[in-house]
Image 1 (cartoon, protein in one colour):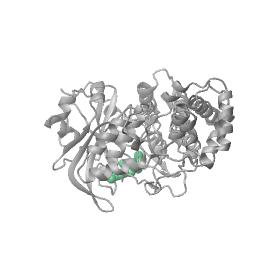
Image 2 (spheres, rainbow, N blue to C red; image 1 turned 90 degrees about the vertical axis):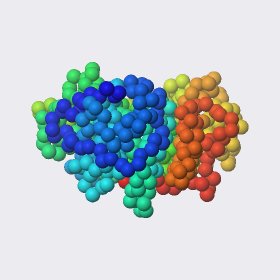
Image 3 (cartoon, rainbow, N blue to C red; image 1 turned 30 degrees about the vertical axis):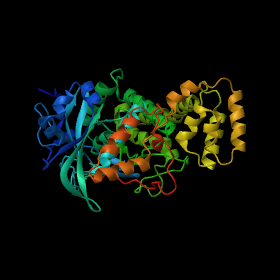
Image 4 (cartoon, protein in one colour; image 1 turned 120 degrees about the vertical axis):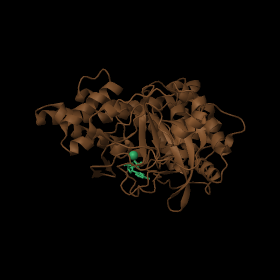
Length: 465
Ligand code: AMP
Ligand code: MG
C-alpha cells in the first residue's frame, strides 16, 4: 500500500461526517508537489509523481485504505451562527503519519449546498504559497502537499481554471465542530469529540476543561505569532479556527506591507471585523463560543461550569500579551519584557508614517540606515533609535532569525496567479523557493523584498469560493 492510511475519524460516530467520494476531473496535471512533506509523512514522492499518484491527488482514484468523507461542522460567520456548514468543497481521505490528508476542490459533498465543490486555480496557489511560507516562518499551520490543475473550468465571476489542493493538517477539528453538536444538544457526540481531540492533540489533558485551557493557550500564542509577521487571516470565523492551534483556511488572507493596525484586505469583510489589530479580541470571542459549546462537559452544575469558563477566558488577554511582547522583544533584539513601551512607541511611529512592517524590523537588524530609510520624518525615529541603543546590547543576530526578509507579499502572489492562469508556472516556483528560506537574504531577488509601489498595491483579496 503506497500510502498507509488510518481512518480514526471515520471510526467516530456517524454524526461526525457524511461519506463523500471525490468527483473525477477530465485532464489533471501536477503543478507542485511537496517532496519534503511527503517524505515526512512516509509517502514516497516518486509515487505521488506517478500517474497513479496524480490520479489520487486529482480525486480521480481513491487510494486503497482510504475512507473518504466530508466532516460536519457549524460556525459563526462574521458573528452570525450557521448550525450546519461542513466540508462543502473538501474531502478527507484519511490520516497518514498522524496527519489528515484532505483534497480541497475535489467535487461536491452532502454539505455543498449550492456550491460546486470546486476550487479555482488562484486560491489553490495562494494557499500553497502562504501556508508553506507560514511554516517556513515557524508558525503552526496546515501544510501543502500538492497542487493540481484539473483541466476543467469552474464558474466564478467568470470562468476560471480549476485546481485541487492537497491539505495536510494535524486534524481538521474546529471550534465549529463542537458548535455543531452543541447546537443539536448531542452531548454524546460532544464527549466523543473531546476524547478524540485529546487523543490527537493533548494526550496530557484529562477532561474537556483541560482541553479547553490548552486550546486557549495555543490560540493566544498563534495569534501573537501572526501579529509578529503582520499576518491578517481575513476570515476568523469559528469554523476557521482549529482545536490543534494551527493556522487553517487560507482564504482572503494577506501579509501587511505598510503598517496599519486597522488594515483589512478581505473584500467580504466590509466592516473590518477581522482587521489586523482586532485579531486577538476575535480569537477571545471565538474561544467564548467554544466554551459555550463545551459548557455541559465542564461541570454538571451549570453555574459552576460558567464560572470555570469565565475564569479561563479572562486569562486570554494576559496569555496573548505575554506571547506578543515576547515575540516583539525578540524582534527588537532585547530581553523578554525589557521595555514594552519601547515596542509600542516604535509601532506608533510605524503606523503614523506608514512604514513597511517587514522592512522596518529587518532594517533594524541591518543597521541604522536600513532602518531609517523606512521613515519619511526621521527625527522622532532617531530619538527612538537612541533609546533603543541605550537599552543595552540589542542582539542583531537573533533579530535576523525572527524578522524575515521575505514574506508572501500580496502583489507578488497576484502576479504569480496571473502568470499561472496564462500557463506560466515559473514565477510560482521562483517565489516558492524564496519563501522557503524567509530569513535568508538572497542576491538578485530584491523585488520580493520591496514594498509595492502605489500602482502595485493590492487592496482586496477575494475568498476561494
Ligand atoms: P470557507 O469560506 O472556506 O471557510 O467556507 C465556508 C463554508 O462554505 C464551508 O462549509 C465550505 O465547505 C463551503 N464552501 C465554500 N466554497 C464552496 C464551494 N465552492 N462549493 C461548496 N461549498 C463551498
Ligand atoms: Mg472554512
